[in-house]
Length: 220
Image 1 (cartoon, rainbow, N blue to C red):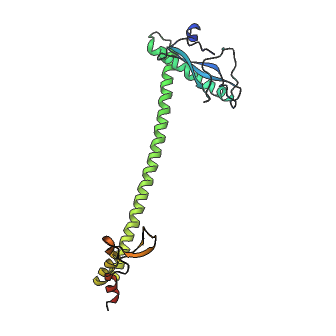
Image 2 (image 1 turned 90 degrees about the vertical axis):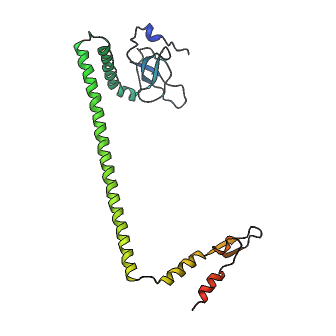
Image 3 (image 1 turned 180 degrees about the vertical axis):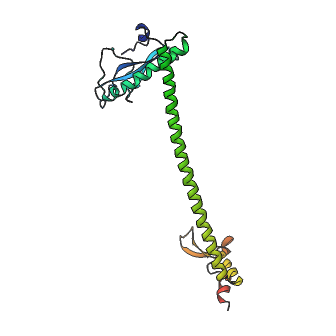
């Protein structure tokens, strides 16, 4: 079905404002057989009047139905009063800013529209500030607790080291053992596995224990 993109002009609609119009559902098997409401507006980029999605959020067929058709979508009908109020206020704002001789009622409506919008932004700002404060406090608490745990661990380690210092010779042997530790090696040819020295096998395979480890184990 061809959509008349200039229907709004033929109906004498004001291109500077937006309207609510009944629209048909998309012809899909799972789409309820309902008549929705959508915003009808002039789009200069396309040189056409067009409808958007239904105000309930569902996708709809393009183009408005006859105004005499009644909407049957319960969600659209629930949102309708709020949308009509917002569109009327927006139209009043446009006339107030474009026509100096706008009526007093339109000036009042325009002022109220902007004040309401400012109040909504203020509420959102306060909510964000509250969330940010809570996140900051939680981060500081986590930082303090983490710092306390780390400090306690360092203090305990210092006490234990002071009470039972490790002999230098023992520490050196431990480092050598760690360097010459066993690693599991799989032969790429026959797939056999063996333990090799991690340090001595850098250039050629050396079975574990290597000469260094055997020397340590045999020392008195």
